[in-house]
Amino acid sequence: MRSRKGPGGSNERRSYRQQQVLLELRRKLSDPQMLPRLPEVLDAMASTVRTNLPAGRLGETLRLAQQASDAEISQVFLGPETYARELPGSETDLEYAVELRMEAVAAYSLELWGDASYYSDWAYYEELTIPSQAGSR
Image (cartoon, rainbow, N blue to C red; front, side, top):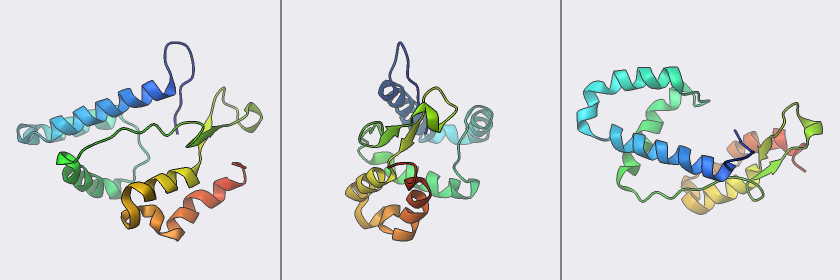
């Protein structure tokens, strides 16, 4: 999770600005006239966007984006205190860091998507939460 804390902005405002960029990108890429330019767009993104999304899941992500093209979209800020906790300086070498509260993220995902949520699979949930729980209590 990336975070900013300082004058002139908040994590929440930064998050919403990033979400606006993603929504606009989705809108633009949904335009059939953009299809011939897709390789150019992907090249530009590859040099400027960093992600931990496995390349093998790109197709799934694109299919989800297509399915959601007509869906109502709501923006959510997964920040402190409900969805993250601020890490004390003694736990990290960073000036400011937060850790997701995966149990809260999982509960929200289940609320939104029910059985379709990845978190409905206990093994998936454990894989994400168990290693980090020692430091989150």
